[in-house]
Length: 639
Image (cartoon, rainbow, N blue to C red):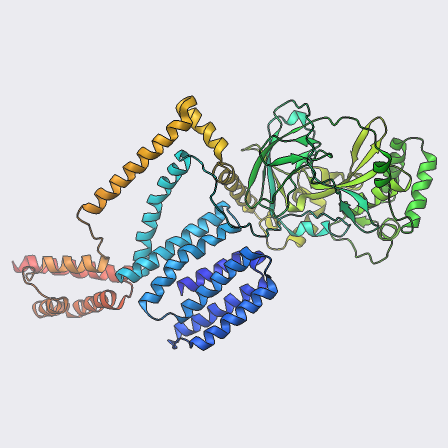
């Protein structure tokens, strides 16, 4: 049953990747296996199991599909192992399952390499190793598991030293990354997409800003530029993933970003930025991206720069002022009124801002559904409540309607600051949309219409928005962030976040450059070459120690019940006689009839443990110690 629980727990952890149907299937099989185990029912026939296997594969193909090869592969392994456990009857079959588990359980790392995933995998592997020892040596699971975890604890420091000193080599091969859609952004933005962000508390990235005086708060993390508007959605620019090879002048320490794994190429930057980290490119908008998706955490350093002032071409001007003028007529009329009342773009924006403030527009995470074809008109003149996407889309469209080149930018706003470790945590619910507009002689500039109706949103993270706390917590559901009002929960959440940050930065991102820097601090400039020598010496020492350990006489750690029985045998007057346990107990019962009940109970406990594999409890141990003490006292008296 222990293995069945592990499989069900794995499916629960991977429910977002493997889907609810598969998790339900594994849960049903686990309940069935529990029923078979509890009522000692015979295992189902191979035909029944084959039918279940076919049903499971059909469910997987329908819920996961063949395109997501990694998720399909992992789910098939878990399903096969679960069915094999139900079928297994002999010791050899159970040993095969525990061996296969050493490949199945680490599959969790394909989806997450966080500290918590690592602890779960280690615990599961320890339990599985304990099962293997218990099956091989016919020991109780609890005793075997203790032995297994002792071995794992010894392995951890050895593994850490090898990671530090062994030279980093590129992978010879690797599985394709799973489709980890862990991003709150979308290539196509309409006012309804970003409403879902407050329902996800997944970490998007962490940022370490070395010189905060160079970057004024609030922090707008640019990710995607949307310069095409079809009346409903703002579409990603065609130039988004085209590298720009021109050199730029940068100064200052810049900032570092640790991005979480994602199936999207875009990265996050403050303003227009450039990065010299391998694999990172910059486009003409000054945003950063990778040529491939991130199958694991990725750390890069970026530098902000002042973009050169370039006049828009006719084609660029038309592209950034295009909009379907047959929609949102009322909004167009309002924008043209402001245009006649203003002589500059700054004055136009001032009139627009004053209109939003004076008409009591409201920022909300749960706006009403808008079914009108002219959604901007419905929002501006009827609903008057929305989130960042509503305001950014409305403002950008109205500016385009009067000939101001405008585009939408999606990314993240703010972040939760860790004072102790000096970094910002940015979550999926911090995703944001704002506007960039072009002014001749000044270039592209940013405005955030959300700031006009909800200035508090610019302070820190969305989780710190006091007036939206009720909506925010209701949208998140079961989450530590949603329960931060409970005493101790906020401290626990920040502590877990701190540990995960240290793990991500110094373990997951311990790449070749960090290893080189560390070794140079320890050994000087020749640290890289000396690390190989140290690794060879260290491995040689380990092999010699293991060889010496295996050659020495093995010391068997005897179970408590066996140790107590041997103590009882030694203190009795029959210690020199070669008796079986039953013969010894019978002889002691004959010599000490007043202890007959206790002796009989001890023999029953001992034989149940030794021959039936049952546990030897703490209560049984205490009773045995009292019996031994009594027999020892009476033996001395007789002598």
